[in-house]
Image (cartoon, rainbow, N blue to C red):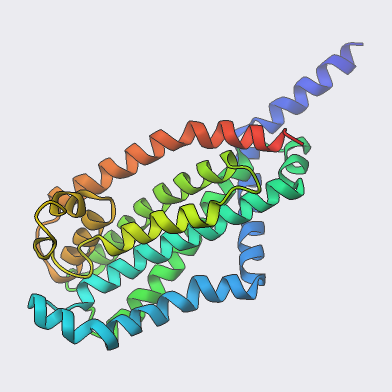
Amino acid sequence: MTTLTQAPAGRLAVERSARAFVEQSAVLAWRQISVMVRDRGTFLQLVLVPLLTLVMFKVVLGDAIGSATGQDSTYGTVPLVILVSAMFGSVAAGIRLNQERGTGLLARLYVLPINRAADLTSRLLSEVVRIVVVTALLIAVGSTIGFEITGGVVAVLGIFGVSLMFGVAYAMLVLALAVSARPSAPLVPLLSLVSSVLMFFNSGFSPVEAYPGWLQPIVENQPMSPAIEVMRSLAAGGPIAENMIKVVVWTVLIIAACIYPALHGYRRAATSR
């Protein structure tokens, strides 16, 4: 009787250990990355489309934006495309999570002897890997069309850091919505609408002063604009303190607001079948 009562408790302790959490999160993150890479359409959309978008912005809009603003458009469009790629990649991951809920995969993972937080954490880890890889590719392509980083290694690391802060916060928002929405919910239109609004009303295309007066405070303080301005300043030189504070505040607020709904929603989604 003692053995029967102690065995589950011992197994539960192992499942909740920090070592199990780290190892299982890494294994499941590799699964997420493998699924993304093997899905050729999704992989091309997440990697090739941002690169083509960056080149298109330079070819089609570069001279027009530069003439209108007096600034090299590349220093706005490269950060803009980095953040946009982070957003739409997270949307794809959220849709996949919502579909896996519908197929019962989350329920199967939930009953396995693994750490309860490992799967959700693995999805964020896979987003970190994707954001780092795509950001590196966009910086490399951007360097061929005029995006020169004058601040050295520290500036490069700062650009990666800002893209990760924004990307992880947005990924947490998407995950919270994905596990809370029904499998049949219109998740794609909702997330696409949010991403599109953020994408078109920011300081990446044109300076904040070019927007109507009533819209300028919104554009200046929405999550993308300070992130773009920090990356612009890191690349071309300029003050970063004020906008960096905004980036950190937005990151903390979004993650803090979404972490409980994400955890609670995941548990409910995994045990609803």
